[in-house]
Image: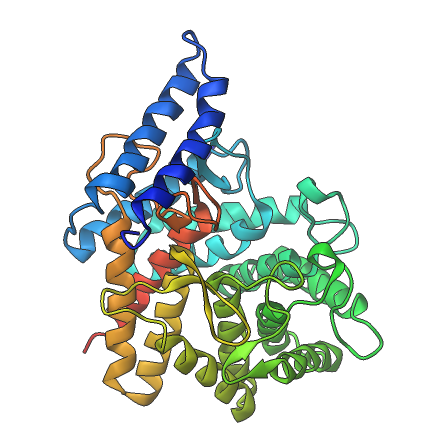
Length: 405
């Protein structure tokens, strides 16, 4: 038992909204209460994004508390002890998502530490015990949507949770699971040490710097030269793909402009790995990425949802997850350099996300949650409230609190 954008042309927005509503209307039956509820939610949210603008800002603490409540609800409403993928206007609450449950456990541990939230600590341990049950015999983690084979990125994100769980509890079961995951990540690397197989769509991704970060966290508590070698190899390859701060091969698919979500995954992985290794070249790569992103930050905190490897914005919506992630990096740079511009950029980025978060609605499914895109029909996780968007918003707000004098 669990412990319990306004910048889109109206004509374009209307076409997008009508295209999306057709799905809902085709599915709704008068007797189907669930579908009627989804339709009502859809109509209300689209109306707000299209005609009424964004919700009124509350106090930052109100936004943080609402987000925490929503994330705990995502845990409560999962069919097991993982965390629900999130809430979709096309189908309601979805099943547990193994990949993000791993790093959401880290957020729960952070809440316990920073806000003395004992309930969050219990949830973190519960999620990590569930991950141990979901781990494949070879040590990897898979996504049932794509089959039973292990995936490098998913395994790395769950490794972050397992390492943190061990450091918090000293329970050897978490260390054993973490070492098995780490050994698998070393085993599936190619002869050069790169992750070129067992990846999303079978192609290498620069954002696997986040997996290198996880492997280095494990190396810090359970030293192994091969783990460090593989991590460094992938970090070095990521740097080889960077030009003027931007990355080639950083998108989910070949040739696509990566979401800011992907880009900041890559930046954060370089930064955290550089700190662990005390390696300036990785820190410099992260700084170059963070500086490049500053050029796309609007005065209201909006960052375009996709930016291609040449640094050109693609798409006129905001990937709210990317905004939150970028705020975390800018805040880390502020703490490292004391340069006020990084703090100001982070504050603006989070303020924009807060302006898109509804903390007053009576609809408990969305109150406090963070949309994938603003407006909600934007390309990134369209018409949904993915759990990781709210997770990174909470992380950003906690980092902002720590950065205050």
